[in-house]
Length: 403
Image 1: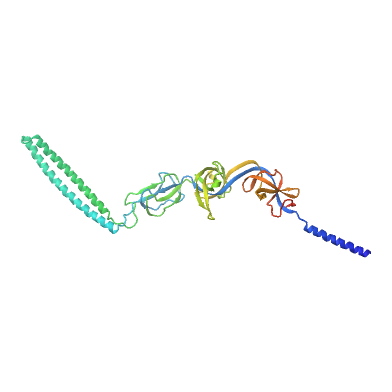
Image 2: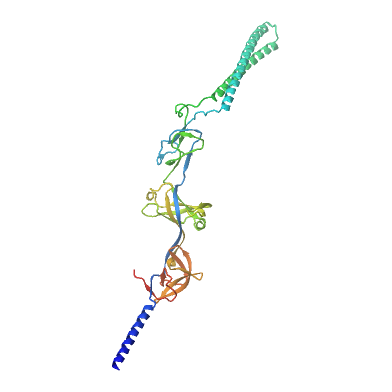
């Protein structure tokens, strides 16, 4: 009987140990999680996007006339002075080639002009003969009038004929000069193009000077060539007067107010720059994103408020990142956004009460992507779960994850 009792006790002990092992093995273990406390403090919301710098006033210098542009000696970055620094020089261009019809028309115009000149010369000779006759007739009339053989009226009539003959001769001379000019003009139409580029000593040049003081930002035309009137030649401006252009989505632009503070980052300096919104343009435009999506964008103009020596390395057309403040408060109850999740169309989080997770619905306000404003549902100092996983449910036992 003793041996049987011992065997039973040993069997019961083994069975109890095996049962305890299975109970311990299948008992839910505490889920390790990251925790944080609900806090109060300052909070701000900003909209961020890429932008670029540009000189406040960029002047495009263009060709005032059609001409042959000499090579521009200036280089990008050169300093220019208003009304003093010569930027470019234009020469008259060579005449163009004539097609067969235009050449025949020009030759016909020369023949017509030559004939008109011969006609004018004949009219001049006729006027000279008329003047010679009127002069002799007036001379005889004066002698007869002195002797009383003709009346004073007859003498005056002869003097009038002499004056008319002189005027007719002057008219004939003028007409002859006009015809000679027309002949020269017709012959000029047949001038052939010369070889090589125009030379500055051949004719007057047009010198283009800087309209304002600043620096050359870009050379649009550098080599010698014929340029039509209005062709852009170069751009000048003052790099010390920079502004930043940020194209925001229209739904973000409506939140921005003039005077809002801006933090400018990733511009290449050691620390971010500070700026202020000067203008939100009232006109939007369509821009295709990198994914091929049409977006309505609005330009926001920002002035840099830091001293110029801190951003002197920035130039025209440099890329920057900017965050524009749209809301700020000094005392806000807030939690990290990683603690929030959606539950039955509402926002919720897990509070840690004791060592258990308690799902709690909350109402949030502003959200800047890192922290969210809490309007109701929790109190400052309460511990919450960060980044809850699918293993966490209401009532699950928790333990703080070791760092």
